[in-house]
Image (cartoon, rainbow, N blue to C red; front, side):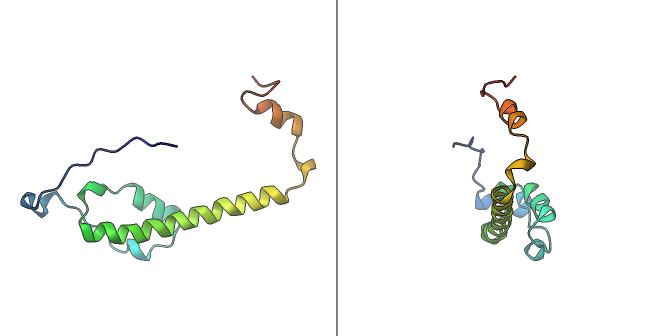
Length: 102
């Protein structure tokens, strides 16, 4: 799987702190979940200091772990689900590229 590259420009030391942003206060203490995801999504990585980027690595890693745990929980529930709770024919016909799909 490939992802488009974001444009990253070098922040020279001569540019000064005016172009920099700081991490939102308390972001390290937010529990992993939707609120942290929203806070992370709005950050302009190119404008963070080197120190804040390393802090962000730990925070982002915690959020990823949360999402992976949720994904595994869904997988487990799907594996435990009873086959008769799913209308197999409608599921098959709703799959793109399958016989009977639109």
